[in-house]
Length: 488
Image (cartoon, one colour):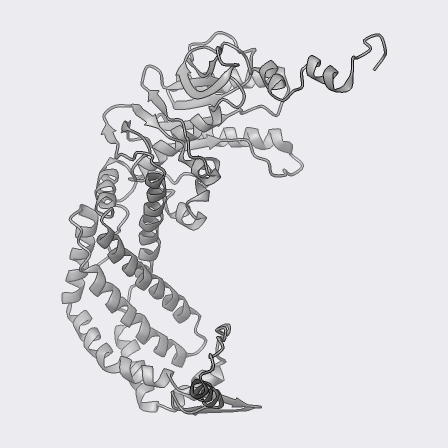
């Protein structure tokens, strides 16, 4: 029997998205990279709905605590499995294998009681219950009940080292340190806290020496390992990653909820559609933002792709992230930070955001172009593509040409997407525009709202100069009148 996945109800068919999507959307501030990597294979409809159901069940505090307890056991399983593989001696492997099987038993017992009423956990619990009823499992469990107490006695022995001599004493024997502690307690003195020493691997000689103290027990352990090694399936350790995904995303959505932001489970739309009411860029929570402005999002077959332009600092990149995070969370089966949403089954997400890292001799433009080419090669007609000032690293003339070429190709293929651009030389096109809304009656105040309209004011460079006190009048008030006749 293969262990059933807790992430996918049916085998996923989508290609994994690049981890850079999580990075560009600034989600790695909330989701550790190792968890993001396990979430890179997105869900199709058959898996989105079961995950949504499981997430809804996990909103119950007691159910979440039960899963968290199971995660602790899964972590122990993972550690023991690694220790077993790395053990240098057969005696060491026999001892570790016994406790590894005990962890499997504890995990199986807990998992069989984790039916939360949704398809994923019900199947998971049902299969684990069948496992408990298997003849070999019952036999293994009976033998573990006999062998574990004996093995624990072996492992609680004290190791005394004097020069090159090593001897073993029974656990709990009086030691010099125990005597000092006893004396301190008698005198009413606080016992100093001692940091736990770093764990170190015992040498094979010590392991073999300890094993030789209990030859009959080691004989039993070797027989146990020989009988049940073929029964043990190492892929049980994958549950550590799967359960960690749920616990991490629950912590993330709890943080969103605590900020007063609504969460909803989108409806899976028929055809091709992304329709979201009042979506939030929750990545701003990492910066301590408390007044995040929501925006509506709409992509249809008729208008699948937009240019996004407008004033600097007006929320263009925020809107781009809002779209990406909403769709990504939906495709992960998680609740989305919005009022309501209908989203069709998007096949993949691609993002191209500016990067600040150093580049090799090929230069930034070449790297940028390579990333774009990779997107074009791997996307399909049902992808979402998010472009943030792509081709901004080349000169104005080339940037306009390449921007038009790329945008038109995506438009003609009816790809869902957004393209933030400051290129003012773009020619007439079928591609519709979204623009940052500015309150012209309030000193061009940014509203952080995005609407469908053509750009009406370029990048508002003059407005930025006024805000920063860099107008000619302001500079002359500070430094004195400029002598325009003097060559400067």
